[in-house]
Length: 272
Image 1 (cartoon, rainbow, N blue to C red):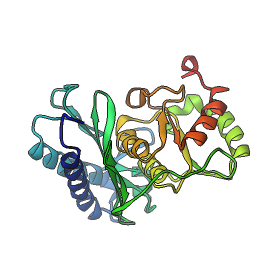
Image 2 (image 1 turned 45 degrees about the vertical axis):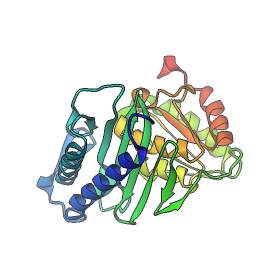
Image 3 (image 1 turned 30 degrees about the horizontal axis):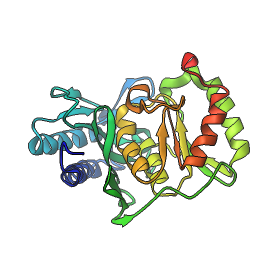
Image 4 (image 1 turned 90 degrees about the vertical axis):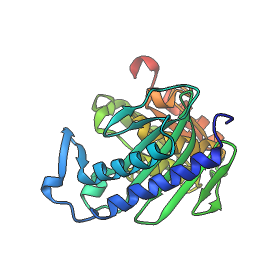
């Protein structure tokens, strides 16, 4: 990571996530109907999302004015340069949970270079959980080093998954995959915030994660964390084009391998 001191990037990512969390806190369980909109059917955005994103953008722009930023609500700002970092942020991952008062959501800040995530910060402001790390500098959960679980395969594994409102056409394929995976593992959870799913894999809470049709801001930070914590993160065809493809499977090497085998029975690039 000669392009930038990773510790400097990580420090800025942490403070940007904290700025977003402070903005979100004033809206928690106090949103009015006028503060919630649908960008598309079932795709919610709130004043909390916008306030969080504005605070994060201001902080990152001030610290690194020559870096590009890809944000969920405002899109791409700055000129992408493959030699310089691109900040990929989700100001409120788990917006549906947030709107309904479910205490499971997060602020996510990832940094990518050359299309690959290298630094990640995921902050859960309700549980006060901070997952932070990056390439070559380890991963910490509330300041303590963490790793993916030692699980060798699917037997006994606790997995997490999700199903995007954008992926209705893949429902039959997903249910076939879910069926086969469910019969091989201990249990599967569906909490509703992909960034935290990835953070929990990096911390060894969940043994693996798979989901279709996610966006770069859902994946960037968590991908950096899982990889640095000893896990494997790929597209469902086994390639590492995570940010452009959006389908993801991850876990410790053995779990990742067995998930890919089961998914491969039903999921191919042609059916994507």
